[in-house]
Length: 291
Length: 311
Image (tube, rainbow over all chains, first blue to last red; front, side, top):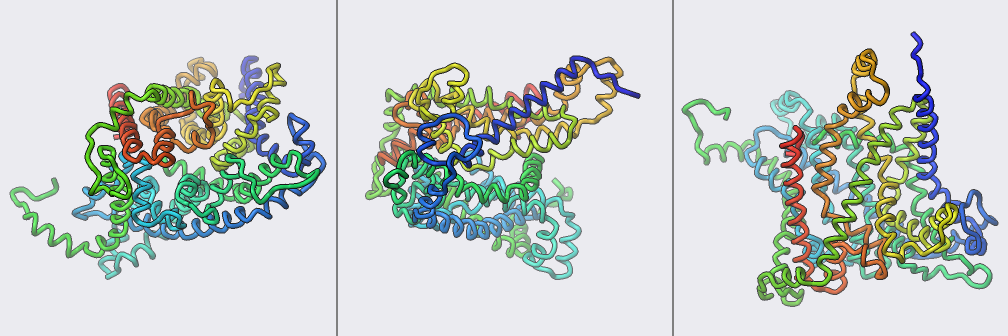
């Protein structure tokens, strides 16, 4: 049976395709603009306005300046260190917490869970948090970006839900065979929760990569700033120290330097984006089941 | 509850059994508990400086209690109403325009028959979600300059060029639109999944009953995603006054404080920049009190009116 398509529906379909194309264009163009601007000549960036479809007088001078800036390199180094160490601690502690809270028949599970859940709704605020970091000597110190952020309660709950879905008979049988908790975790629980673990690792990784506020707040020494805090100095506070240009290059170069800085900090994400996108979409669903 | 009738183990006996059986579990979770105590509960205790004239040199033990002094100073400060209004209006506009946007996008995407076009549009609209906030605010700041991209668009449609982030009138629009740009695609995922879960037989039945596209949307599609909409709406309403300071700090400047400054950014300035520890903590405390009330209220209303609630 051929389904009759009404006139109104045809018009709607045409409108829908046009509208969605426009939405897609709006989402992608700013990134394209920045990418093309970063390899355009400063003089033309300063004098011409409007859309940039292709590089204007192709030049890589902005990138040369950006890579000469020592803060970009230290920023990258700091961020990579923080991400690797954080990720390990994040995963270990979150797995331990989720394992504990997913065990049946544990007397203090309920009160301890309440203690953890309470922190999702109530917190001391940024000033007491900052003073806490100071008390623990975590200011002006890369560990200050790692230790205070070791567990996200939200991620822990997602993982606990996934651990709870594993049949108790499996772990009970292992217990009877004399397996300890570590063995059960490594041999049964972790292998059966790989998908959720991957999603959570991504969540942690991305949030560490994106965070700038505490880096900008606790570091006195600029060489200790993570990448996003360095970006803030350059993009928002207009601090282009170490990237000055002279002569004809100097005109309009701040704009292309800013664009090049954005690209340097974003291209790694854009490159791995196609590979991790499906895990993220899966993650949204895993998070949503929680309710 | 599952105990046998007429028999109840004594607390100490149960405690002993539990510790013998689970001592290694408690040992494993110990670092987790220490983390929560050190970085969640210690700051909560530290929030008591809201009632003190605290200075780091004196420490909490030696600072004197001043009762509600900081609170009354805030309530009578000339900024109080401005901060309250800005916080509320920004979140309200964010909710009003930002909340329906992903639902509309999901509904439109759901009507697309061409699988390739659909996949492409989805991938592209998710992309901004992966850019960091600093990068996005950097781009917004640059595009808002007098010769920036936004001004080119405005000029194209017949407007005049003006430095957008210097004018308090435009700030809210920029804030809300850039938020939608970043999250609209990402936010649509959850609705798209719910849409694909709607039983196709319902549509068939509606068609047989003579329902056109529009009627199907009202009577089949929307009811199908209502639970998701309600849950997300409660969460958003609960967060109405808990506006993050990060985006504000990145975007604003003194010339637009009039519309841009919100409670949390004021806390940041008075606390971390001017070192008024007790005063800023008091404002933060006031803010979280308002938030808690809103979460509970939103949840209560939703539980009474619809069947959905967070707890």
